[in-house]
Length: 212
Image 1 (cartoon, helix red, strand yellow):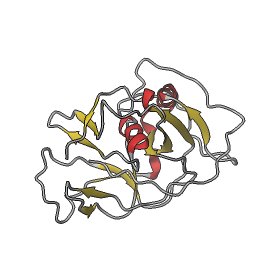
Image 2 (cartoon, rainbow, N blue to C red):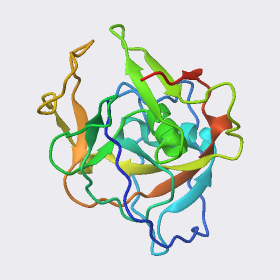
Image 3 (cartoon, rainbow, N blue to C red):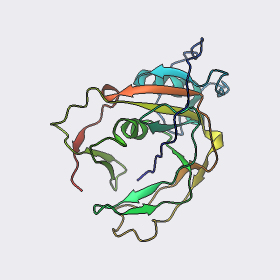
């Protein structure tokens, strides 16, 4: 379970230049990815560079490897501010998860899913299985029309984050199916150097109906 928290949107302007293109055979977001010694950039004077599509996320991993992390939001955010993550049970209860933080992932599939479905009318969730695989769930899967859904994946230098081990939130009423894994979090404001617009077509994994 991963608390990916949205913050207020800032005004964004695309940069005049694009990021360099250096593709490698394996360009997915694991820490084992080897990348050339290109320095991870900072946001320019006009803000993060604006890109679009899953291929651009692949390109960024090819360039910067495991030195970047990802945060999903429904809107583009100039500066990511710490927010209180929480776990939700089926009865509507909320259980604070650690201190307020910016939460990120070393891969971009969960951030894409979060960007598309968080804060929309359809309830959604992710099941983590004992073998490490994920099941993505959204209420109305197979019947609702998501073709117009868009979201934004923010790309940030990983050096701003710490890998933390957290306990189950106090009062959580359900047993964990698998042990909780460490998470990358920052407790201060961070600025993405790139923001990638995504659509449902950029999320290739099956989505089943949400059943709380």
